[in-house]
Image (cartoon, rainbow, N blue to C red):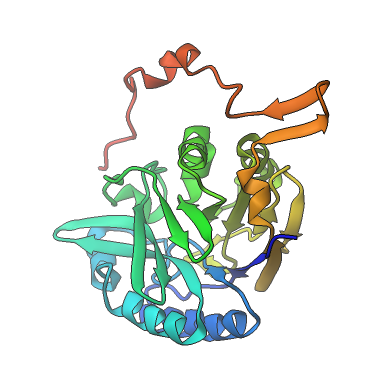
Length: 286
């Protein structure tokens, strides 16, 4: 039997524009999950800063670089606990602001993903679209791909990371009301269609009258729900993942009669339409 990889998903509340308090909460949670044997702990989108900013000028003072102060503290905790974590932050790069998530481990920052697909909502109205491709990084024994919230509505994102060898695809989110179908159906679909473990970590609580819907979830490689959170309370989800399941893309249900391989059965030559130029852009800011 292959060894399991324990993962924890921290569905927590976030304090708006209070990075020090949010970092303290993440460190406290990491102590709990690391002590319980989690190899990877996932936190929500913008878990360091909050999300509902009304301007770039308002958000910039709470943004940080990556690597930076928050990643340094989390790396020290990961070093001591022998674990890894992924968390969301607003990343400052010169005069640009990115909605980012960061993979941190005992050696420091292992990967930074900058949100590519931006909805017209919250801080994403003011951030710069991500300028780095989807990528897969090693978090100990697991190969992990990261994307953020609205990215999950674009199946190409998860497929690229799966093709690049991801065992686990992580989606830190700030799902608002109206995103229930993402939580109810899309997470399972992304796991099934790519034969990967798929992890969605949402937050709970309220910012400026805007309430988040929770419903974090861990799904297995066949789309089955391994763990699911409530819609309105803080909670830690746990799952023990057999990474070999994500590495077996050829699924034999009945030998020579019912076999599935969603990678080998692809027909990329028929997908050229996906690369056509965009014909409509997001609204211009007033």
